[in-house]
Length: 306
Image (cartoon, rainbow, N blue to C red):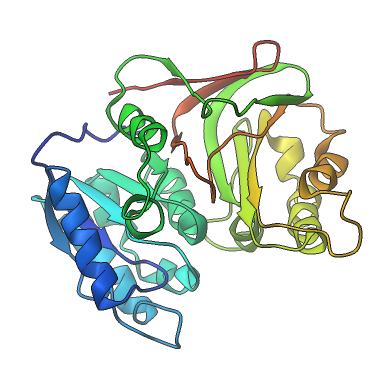
């Protein structure tokens, strides 16, 4: 896996919307925020585009801007403005050969899960499941979120993942494992099955999170992965947060209860309550990185290879 170069002061960050758009006021706030952090910017022209009411332009436009930002030698990193919906439409328009030749920091989560999978598996790049500019930075870029992001982007030595203070990591199934970290939003992982970027979990540590789903839908997505062998093939599983996910039928059977029912008998180590996803603070995970988990110490360790 290719680890991208570190993000230096004055680096050029490309701002993109692979999924849903923002309005003009939000775009200006995003641009100003990144510049105030000490970086230069290049901005895709589709951030405020509106296709279908929920997409930042059509699929070709969004794929084009990913290709352009990766191919541009002046751009050092690519930050997604937000997630949303419709990212799957852009996947077939990504030029994965150009991207593979130009590895650089790629940051985002949620609907951007599909892009992470393709960049990890096909382009052999480490990418970063972390805060997005509009969603997590402009209004509330707290110190724990900020420190986790920049520690992950610039790490050169092995380091342990840190949950926010007061948020405990719990053991679901005991054990230890080591492998490449993969995963993302559960709904998108499920939707990847059968595509050219289908999630490959063999020998890997699988991370899953989601937002705003009924437990019955989480069950559907999780069983799609289970019945496809994705949990069984993994070396270990990490459950993230499931913000605003609910059970309208029985409030004391939570999303995590449901998922533990589904994966608890899989013979791999399982940790839960890792604060990376649709949560504040939002901790950063390097997808594609060498990773180990140990439930006896409740630790997740990464081994950067720059």
